[in-house]
Amino acid sequence: MATERNILACLITVVLAIGFAAGQPAGATKERNISAKARAYLEHALDVMQQNALHRETIDWGKLRSEALDHAAAAEIPVDTYEAIRWALHQVNRHSFLQLSPELEKQEEDRIRRGTTLHAKRLFRRGTV
Image (cartoon, rainbow, N blue to C red; front, side, top):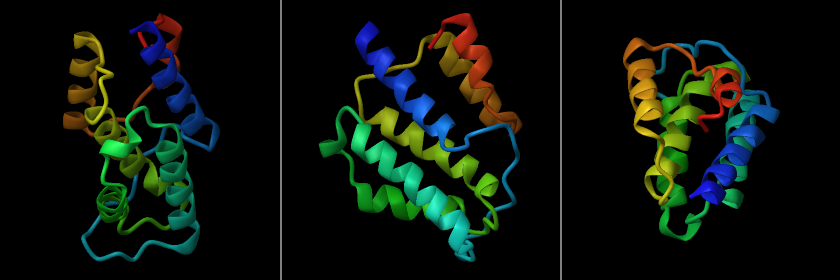
């Protein structure tokens, strides 16, 4: 279980390394008016997830990518794709045996409900991931 958490922490760190920072995405619509720059950023994040997911063979990557693009439909700049990246990470986690601790699961549900951003630095500092 510790190894699985380390892998999840590494995956999150990779996403952070490509620019995952606090910020609010633009409101999304189902029409895909995503800019080329935002699309490339999201595609790169999805590529990293696909390459590093523990149970990548059980995930329908075409469907996940399409739905992630729907979540980032109105993205104009990379920061606008952050919510779609969070959503995709959650979907990837659902297909693995990795589970957040009950405390982290509740925090994530609360964050999604409030529409606030994830503060990964704080979670890592606490050692809960």
